[in-house]
Image 1 (tube, rainbow, N blue to C red):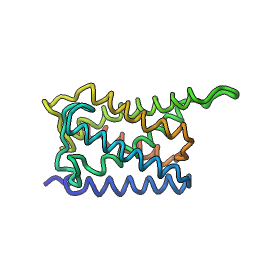
Image 2: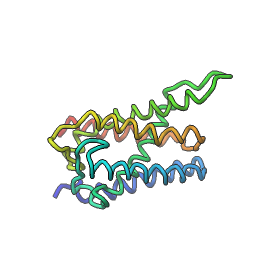
Image 3: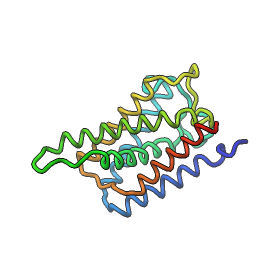
Image 4: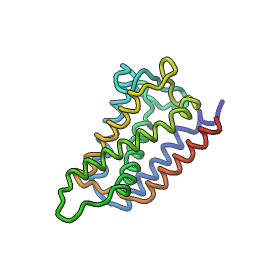
Length: 193
């Protein structure tokens, strides 16, 4: 049995839990927990609808590598969505310059959320081949549909926008470390597998 079959859920739970704790300790806002609660259940629902119907991401199923599941969706997947979204928003905020004095900020908030959605979809392009090889999930027909990447970008945008509209405090350099460490990990595995 590959080691990923017994370590993936626990490892993701510990890493994501520690990251959320670190972000909370740095920001100390109740808005973050409310956002996490809503974003977790929204992304879990999108995944459950996606697995059941194929209407969200395309036709796919989760494999046995992540085994704590309900409705065919691993519980840790929605947690992963939340942490990845926070990390992509941290990166997006660093990529876009702050608004000039006197400029409206609504446009920038939407732009940051949209950029975070695009970064999240790019991230999925990198992880898809590895995730399939490690049997995290499998695509019907063996092809990854474009719909999947569009859904990733849209869902990430939808859960990113409230972070900025409601001023949820979440900024932390540890999110960048997480983002680039995971990107490096999946990039290396893309070459190795």
